Amino acid sequence: SPREERLLLPSSSVRLWPSVLMTRVFVYGTLKKGQPNYYRMIDSNNGKAEYLGSAFTIQKYPLVIATEYNIPFLLNIPGQGHRVHGEIYKVDDQMLKFLDDFESVPTLYQRTVVQLEKLSPGSITEVFVYITTTTMYKPDWPLLPCYESYDSEGDHGLKNCTCKYKL
Image (cartoon, rainbow, N blue to C red; front, top):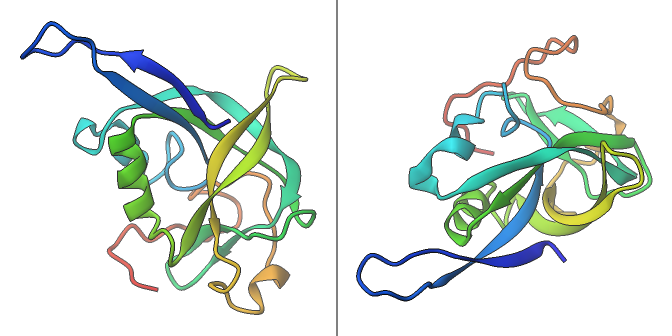
């Protein structure tokens, strides 16, 4: 399950160890290291996120770049596209809430469980991924070029617009 172990953290006001539930999430777009929104993953005001490694989706999905802002979208069409490469993070509830808000859940994206293969072959895990809601994307998006891995500076020439965008 993407919900993971409870970590015991010291409390400054009392001598108890409250538990914090950590959740594994898979990021494949602008939240990856070196991408325009990665800073949000390491901003402690958003919560805690710990990098666990790189992985590929077990199933193929269309990873497309769409809208005038060149946003990467993982379309909820399993079996099409490519096995998508991204990064696994372990996040606390505060970061999970931030990511839900950042990804406009449930309007734009839905948080869905997917299976991943870590780069150490044969190591399979389940995590949450932010995938488009089935009614959100335009009919021509499944016809767009699909990518295995997203890079805002990639050969596709579709640099992500980090400006404040509305869809």
